[in-house]
Length: 249
Image (cartoon, rainbow, N blue to C red):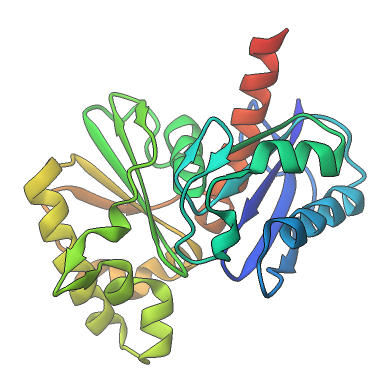
């Protein structure tokens, strides 16, 4: 069963069809730069372009870097502020003419990893962190998601954690892998104190370089890279779209 997942990020919008029984991509991934300004309408047109390129007709799962409640995006940390209180599901359904479900981007990535990836069958508390333009988070207890955690906004040294330890900060400040990992470790100290996770999964594009920085990370939890790397959001979005479609039948 092939379902389309689309991941809207601060710098790029990417999508692919996914085999929802295995988590494997069944088409090439299409990526288009996030338009600037990244208004809801402009991003919706990019999503429409990806759907057209993939010649897809069916339910679509879409991730977004925001607290998402019942399809409405309530925050907008790294995108245009016009996303705040936007009925994203309604906008995308009208633009695409297809069934759409919208969910938090890190939640989608975590769903993929817990179903098929590094968190499969992992007991206890599993934390997924996606390091990109910001820091996304997804928490699971015995496989059950606690949605919209947004722990990238925990305060570190008077700033949001993602303003000190995101992948973008590493790039902008030209930090070495060890220097960046030390900032991430400050974040993990707070996570350990509050939640004592058993497993931490590192996702986002930077997870491809886990061999460069993983040895410098410290936590009371086991730390592993995401199996699906930067495609985890696409896979999780497709899974949620297929699940929602099945429930409606």
